[in-house]
Each structure stands twice: as structure tokens, then as C-alpha cells.
Length: 179
Image 1: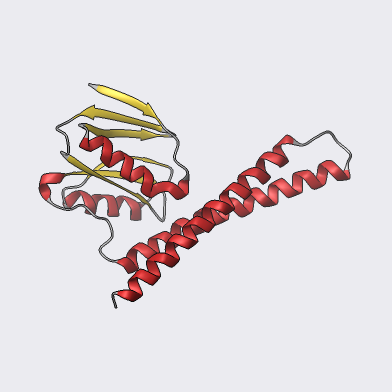
Image 2 (image 1 turned 120 degrees about the vertical axis):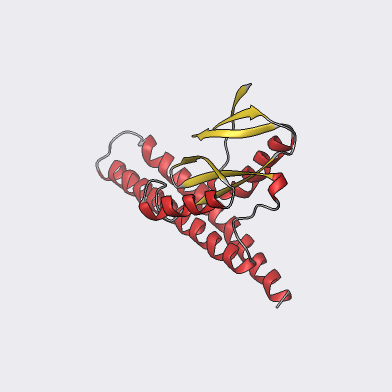
């Protein structure tokens, strides 16, 4: 039976999203489709699948991304779906561990690409918000709600970037402990 669940995860909480998806699979609900804050599941044996998600460098339809997805499919992973540059994979748990990153250094590099994306969107929101508020003040127009919304999103995004920077710093420190 197919079941749809709507749930919001912030971009910087991608690890929590992956954990939740795996908890759902452990309960017998396997991910079969994704959308904006929308997850579709089908019944499966509890723990039958392991779910991983990843932010690609390019959109999933780009030739490089398609090659990467096809490569992962040769390892037994199934491309469940994608939302913007995020792709979702599942693999039968009986086929062994399912990790997209082989070592700490590749995880740190990946985290850097996620930080870059969020930082770019954050900076753009801050710029647009400040510009809209500047125009409102300069031309004595009414309250510019769009400017406030962009500023709020920019500040919220900055907090997310800070969380990811801290996480990356911890990962680097942990990596140095094992060298």
C-alpha cells in the first residue's frame, strides 16, 4: 500500500532526513518517490532497505549526474527520485552496507559543497532583502514584506551554515585523531 507523508527538513538537516528515512524503512515503509516536503512510501519488510541521499554537483538530468546515478545503480542501488539537485537512493540491506562516502575526507569535501550551496542562497536572500528594504526607505513606500522575508530567510540560512561549519570542524578534528 502506498502512503504519502509530508515533512519539512531544512537543507542543513540532510543527515536527519536520511536518518528518518532509514527509520521509516526499519518500520517497513520503503521510500519510492520524493518531492518538496513530500515522501511516498510503500510497504516492505522491516529493515529491507537502506536509504541514502546526496547533493549532486549538477542537476540529475545533466550527463555527468546521469553517469554517476547509473554507476551507483550498477552497485545495486536504486535511484528512487530527486528534488532539485538532491537525489535519493535505496539499496537492499541484504546486499551489505550502503554508504556513498568511503572516508572522512570525502564526507568533509561533500559537506563543503552543501555549505557552498546554502551560503550562496543565504547571501542572495540577504542582498535582495536589504535592497528591497533600501528601496522602501528611499522611496517612502509602504512596508516591504518581501524584503523582511528575504532577510529572515537569509538570517535563518546563515544559522544553518554556521551549524554545518561546526559539524565540518568536528569531523576534521575527529579525522586528525585517527591519523
